[in-house]
Structures are given as structure tokens and as C-alpha cells.
Image 1 (cartoon, rainbow, N blue to C red):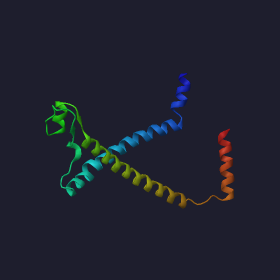
Image 2 (spheres, rainbow, N blue to C red):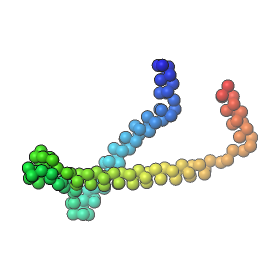
Image 3 (cartoon, rainbow, N blue to C red):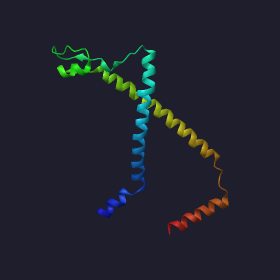
Length: 135
């Protein structure tokens, strides 16, 4: 069973997936910083400092605080502003990822166009090489 697990864990797909997850997490941190440190301050400056994260709806008569942090201490609140901020961040992050993947796809398509087609002789030699490797 241990040998079978080792084969599974060291297969190319699993290792590629692990690398993808690690790179994705690192890229996510970069994009999160881009949104939080660069894009949202500009949006805040353009909208006059509008920040939804502190908007809430009290669900109890005991909640009288003016800030979300204090209101949560007093009782149940519906933090719709915080949710809206997270949704806006998600849309911006998704759009940035879309642009990055689109640019990567175009770059890969250009590289594929640059590669010259193999001659008939090169194709046969490649097939022979592959057959010899498989033995």
C-alpha cells in the first residue's frame, strides 16, 4: 500500500497540481495586495473615501454602536458592507486573473507560431526515438 501511495504521489499530475496550488496561493497574495494597496485606495480617492466595510444593519435593539467592531460586541449584526467589500475585491481579483491568463494564453500562442514545423525526416526520427525510449 505504501508503494502504491508513493507511485500516486510522485506521478506528474499530482506534483504539477501541488506546484499549481502553491504558485496560485503566492499569486493570490500578489493580487490581493494589488487590490488592497493600489486599486482600492484609488477607488476610495475617486469616490471621496467611500468604504463599505463599516456598514451594518443591527439585528438587535441592544446594538447602538456606530462601528462594526463595537456593534459585533453588543449583539447580532448583518455586516452587509463587509460582504459587499469582499464581493468587490473578488470581482477585481477575478478580472486581474482573467487578464493574466489571457496574456499568458496569447504569449503561448505566439510561441507556438514561432516553432517551425518538423520535416518528414525529423518526424520519423522523433517516432523512432520515442519507440526506443518506451522499451
